[in-house]
Length: 220
Image 1 (spheres, one colour):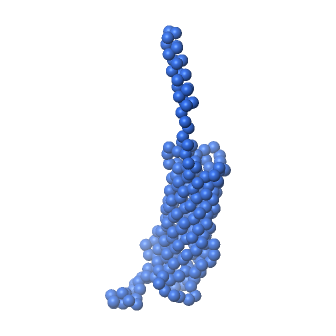
Image 2 (cartoon, rainbow, N blue to C red; image 1 turned 90 degrees about the vertical axis):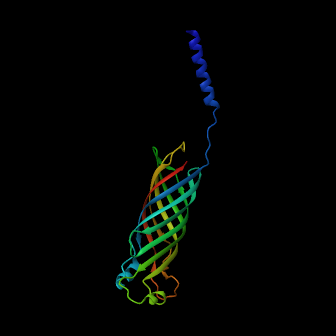
């Protein structure tokens, strides 16, 4: 019996020593996130002219997706986001792309959840295509001076305000689910430009976007 007890004590001692000698894994203070969701666009001035002309409107609903990465200094995150979006309508379509640098914090915590406010700035490029209906003409007309659609462009610097809900992931073994809600808006009121054309009296807008996203990421 005393030999069995001695053997168990020896194994327990070896296990404790092994745990003490095992080095803790160190991870870089990085966060990577992939996101996708829905958004609602607002281009009120252009919509007014489109309705007056009977040319439909800028789609209010759209889809978005993107990727971001950040480096953490204590509880502060400094990173970049890249996102693309497209509208849900088949006719008039709005597509956007933006690249923002942002600062955020993970300091607001409750249990396993983190509420992370985020402030970003960067450029956004928007393309809006108006598809004209019931057009007539010869094939050669549409190759030269007739058009069945008009393409507009809107370029502006934007501010991106959002709040992300995260879950803690100390071991970094799994991608953790997150969600984010926010609003993007052009900083200044910029003109819509007609692609490959010089025009006067162009409509101006501060293009705004409210968005809701589901995201997957890893980080500490």
